[in-house]
Length: 144
Image (cartoon, rainbow, N blue to C red):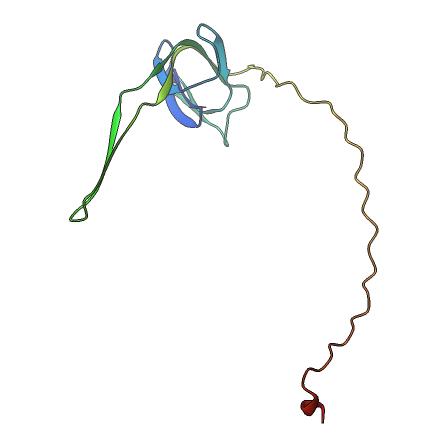
């Protein structure tokens, strides 16, 4: 059984007890997270493809730790110009262990919605346009 799920803006093919390194998540270490954007699900020989996601499907995972990835060197050079720039980058990552894949019946946890009611906005009264005055002629010889 495997699933293709979207986690932190990227798509991953995951199976049970698999380790996955994803972009840094806001969750604390040791917490369990659930991902509901399951794009494809394979159970035995039965494959279900979502349009775009499968309703009721979810992937449960546990945050193992937060870490930084390997250093990537970015080197830019323009020949015969004396231009060289060297820069490095280390991506912040989160290690996840997939604990289970649920095909049906997973409930989405809704975020706390703001229950703030705003007063209806009244339209401002339209201003009447002043009549346009004709521009005086600067050249008296042209008026004839």
